[in-house]
Image 1 (cartoon, helix red, strand yellow):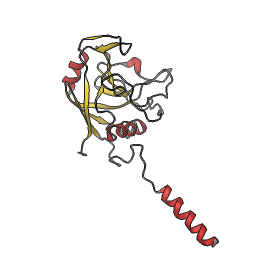
Image 2 (cartoon, one colour; image 1 turned 90 degrees about the vertical axis):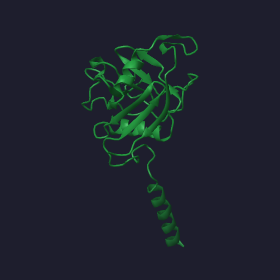
Image 3 (tube, helix red, strand yellow; image 1 turned 120 degrees about the horizontal axis):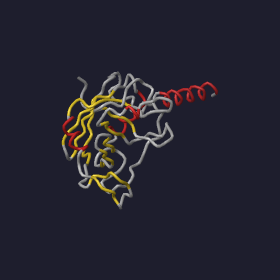
Image 4 (cartoon, one colour; image 1 turned 180 degrees about the vertical axis):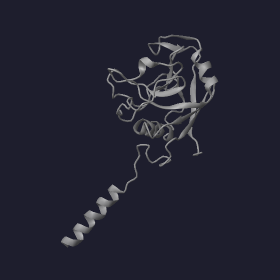
Length: 198
């Protein structure tokens, strides 16, 4: 009886341990540079992510894409010559559900240069979860220095002209959202797709 009980516990333990990860690391496992296509109302953008230098951030982003959680979200913050930010709100400016916050990988050597993608966060350095932004300039002020920076985890490989156009749209202070720099005509991320490995 004792041996049977021990064997049962071991079987249950191994079944629990064998449960596949659901943190994004299981998506195209072994592909260090996964690509994601973002279909927006202004055109398509393809980003290549860097899992080698930003594994936590890349896996986190892939998890949201895999769960189709970025679909029908808005780019809610557009500042010309600075950033285009989105991923956090639906088309009614309601906050979308979030996975836990992640560790800030801003010290990975990647810079907030033109056409890179990085994670948005609060003042606390380790508060990024689902919002991301595109740098539409070389934003060295967002790189780490004396303080934590903003974690870059990839770059645009197609659709730079779409991003340029997005950065120039008319914005306003949105009373409903209670935020400045909101596009007058909403820019919607209609679909995000993980592309097959090259």
